[in-house]
Figure 1 (spheres, rainbow, N blue to C red):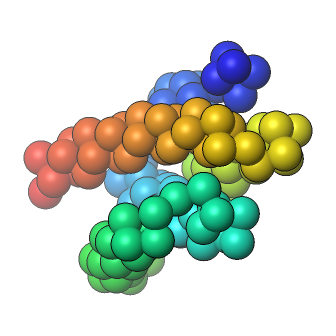
Figure 2: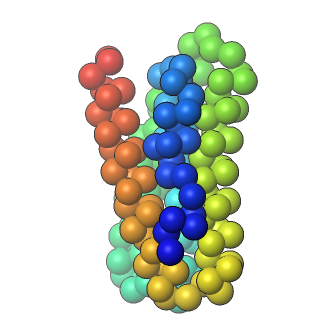
Length: 137
């Protein structure tokens, strides 16, 4: 079940309370990139309606493009590279656990449905994080 997937992405970030705006932006970018990569595999296309998957790709691609400008803008902000690496590493670990879960479940349609629900939770977290960042502007 999903509990085996362990910590959510939000819990990964809650463990690091000193996360700055540029880390948030880079983390959001990494999260969307990893989501795009996950759903771009041949295993995912077998589990989803192609039309809906194409729409999802387009939305993710648009968000990646929008965040690229933010990443470039935040590149000038002084922050230790280690903080950024920690945030990105948390996202990569999260998606690594998702991938391992899918492999253990042999990419079954049921496993993909669990992953879809988990990704929706993560995207919801991402949306809340984006709203928080906009309020700081």
